[in-house]
Picture 1 (spheres, helix red, strand yellow):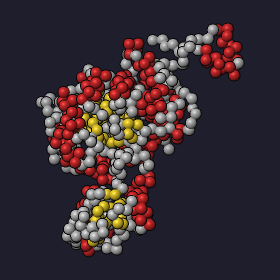
Picture 2 (spheres, rainbow, N blue to C red):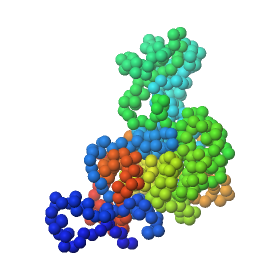
Picture 3 (tube, rainbow, N blue to C red):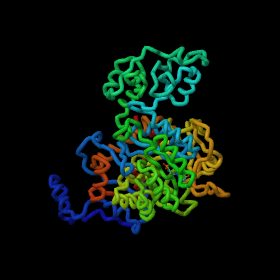
Picture 4 (cartoon, rainbow, N blue to C red):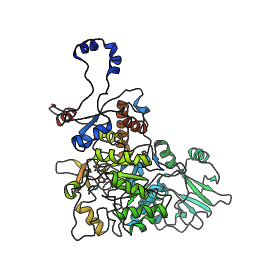
Length: 546
Ligand code: IMP
């Protein structure tokens, strides 16, 4: 299909115009159309079929600011915003508590999967919510009768040591000592009571101390933890030195304005039993629930949205997945606070092949997010993200955030162990949640990696309880990508550089410039795509960041 790039200048005048370089801007003014296509023309599938990310490019704009001045703040739901527009998928090879903690620390959000028992999932939520606090309002407290062995078990369970000991082993009881990791680490006799090894020369701060004052006391003391006590010496809360350090190192961390805790999101299904699961998640501190379904426009999901909004009005609901305006309208009408867009674009997904349903991702994101924007409902472009350019294209199509599975599954923070592939590469398992392996695990009792699942996870594919399991995904592996603490900052810097090239200084500015036609696009042919990739080299090393 020929694509017009604007009016050509008349032949004789053209030479003179080009020679007179200083007149370039004046000549540009005489053109009646701009280079490239506006977004609606680009996405108009009547002309060329529905597009996905690789089918087009964004034309560069004007650079008037450094890349470091590009801000990426963006809403993930109607009420909650992030500083980084990146989410990790609710998949059992991608997001458990460790990924959720690190995604949130880095300014994004990890959605904890539900291919495990409700109790295991709630425990993961609790770990995220406890991870970083200003004042820890519900610290783990030991009784004087607790043994060193029990303290070691608690350290292994929670991942931190440093427990206050109070007279009756609970909060609001008299503080009598502190047990630190170092006290218990090499203590040979697990049967000894913690009172035999606890420190009693305590530095404390009085209740009512501000966070800034308490931080000062902690900084000056040589201690790892600062217990906060009332006038009678009863423990009321705890401040942690490592939290202080984390606050310094993670300035973008995703937190609600009134809270020092990380924002936590988790996925559930839309069956009746998911209501019990949700209750446990909310009790554990959940902020955002993600209704996880491959086809979100269902009676079950609409009823679940209404149930959540009525029963837990403080919880935001991300609904989905959808790829059409019609699907989106049902979920928005039911009260969705955010939408997840994508069907069949995921790297481990065979939905389009098996179900004949789905939509190329760029078309889906544009269609749904331009509709949802009219109701102030932010959208997540979910699946098919292979590189920084795809993130930018998802945002340019109107998504507020982008969700990744395969791209993050090879990081240190994803569940599971690395192993060496037959080709000698370091890899980690990655599987679609609609793969036979994942669905069988769901039937058998879940797959939480760090705890023993006690009953099954919930359905995403309406197929898990059927006698024949119909796969919508595959199980495979992805290569090692190192830690998200390096990888996410690389993605963020890449998006900042890209927005600089485009000439927009924020995600909101990008949306506006796309919608008003300032940001232009161009289709690319297969040979243009080949040209845009590395070519004609004998060999090369594709190192993406340093
Ligand atoms: P990726 O980032 O391209 O790997 O895609 C991740 C997304 O694929 C997830 O967030 C889900 O929306 C989707 N997904 C996960 N498992 C399956 C599956 O088994 N079939 C189809 N889509 C899946």
